[in-house]
Image (cartoon, rainbow, N blue to C red):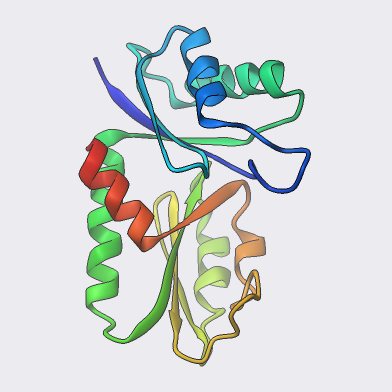
Length: 178
């Protein structure tokens, strides 16, 4: 049975978007998915299902999360082998750029069109660069980028529905679940 990894966007932020790990597991199991596990409290969940349609899986999870929490939880799903390849590519991008201050991986619901990819990648500056590969956009930030700024390259706003994780979380999840 295929293993999938879902990334939940905008949970456990502030007092009104709480979604404890046990509640996430229960909601995922409520739609019939099995072997459910979470990693840290930022909305990373592994599960198995015989379903093959990523869009259908995302819809089912989003409906279950809305029913459980009462608010929308955008959900981005990857098949485990797809995520393993994404994590390996992320590690390689960092290795090719010694001295990076941060590497954030934006996990996208949908691939970007070529024009948007060009606009995102053109946002490179002294602060760093963004490289798009499939449903992942890598924010590769150099020393001196402005910490605390949500989008230091001004490109994340172009990515559509997605959520980000730092390189450590991406590689840890891949090692643990892929």
